[in-house]
Amino acid sequence: MIIVDKNCSCSVIHRAWFARPRGAIDSYAEELERTNCSVATDKRKGHIGQEELASRWGIGLETARKTIDKTTQLAVRNFTESMGGRRLKPIHYQLKYRRLRCEMYVDVYIAKCKSPRGNKVATVHCTPLHWIRFDPTPERRDAHKTLDSLFQKVGIPSALIPDNAKSLTQGEFRKKAARASCPIYPIEPHTSNANLCEDGIRETLRGFRRMMSATNTPGVLWDDGLQYYSAVRCHTVNTIHETQGEVPQTIITGEQSDISWLAEFGWYTYVWYMSPEDTSMERKKLGKYCGPFFNEGDAMSTKILTCKATQVNRTSVFRVTAEEARSEQFQKLSADFESSLKERLKKGYEPLEESDEFFDGSDACDVHWEKSPTYDPYEDEGPQHPDETKEPMPDVMMWH
Image (tube, rainbow, N blue to C red):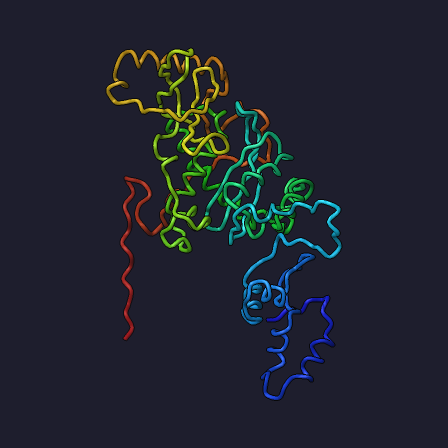
């Protein structure tokens, strides 16, 4: 289908049609396609046409036309009104980051407590392939800050699909998306089920809660846990048919994913880390692994929880061997570590449970924990009680 630019006069097409050489063009549709009046998106001022491109690159007009149809010009500049007396407006932002061939659904997850880093909510970006990213922020109005890390670390999606929340459709969020030429298509009001982020959040929370419970992680570390577990899900093969056996991260970025920075340690396990005690020596200290640093340090920077309930960024991190874990010295160190952590975190030291009444800031809009679905047998599959006996089915007459 050909979309004619509203700025192109149809009389130009008609004159070209009637003035054509005999037998040169077979159809009116080919003449429409041959003219440079068809465009799928709005062109920026200074858009380079096929004649200019053919002259500058030394290629044919037909090759130039096909090249323009298959490429974009997101950062072209308009020189018609510029006399060289002023600096040009910088618009290279659109070429700075990777362009993704997918739409992303956006939502905000409201936590039930304030984390040690001061986070209360998390902006969630999710795709239909269940690639998901949690970016914790102190307030909902800080959602626009997550776009900077998303565009830089992952790329710019073809569109953002949020609900009708003002923090995701107006203000700085809309300005940053528009500057990157990333349109925002809000879903219909009061249709939260249409936002695929709801499914992604639900499935992530199920695995996240099991992980936190298995390791007895303090509930206030929810932001670190969600960031870590969502990254694990992005780098894990799932059963979605469209992935075709690939991990979601590979499909989104187009590059084979590396899991070195995620697979070295288990979540919230004891590790040794190097801490400079003075200028002359360094000594190993005991800490808890809380995942990698996502926006700080180098690629292998890890987030270590200390006994003072603070987090440090270290690259020299070592595993606790089985022999060390059985020693009396390590047992004493770990006991002192837990007691110091409990004293500083107070109520936040308690692990997450299904009825987290001690959490501050919970309301009816929060996403509550959900149990994993269980199999519920039908009535005709067998007795529901051990002492119950199943009656035989009556004979059925066969008609010939």
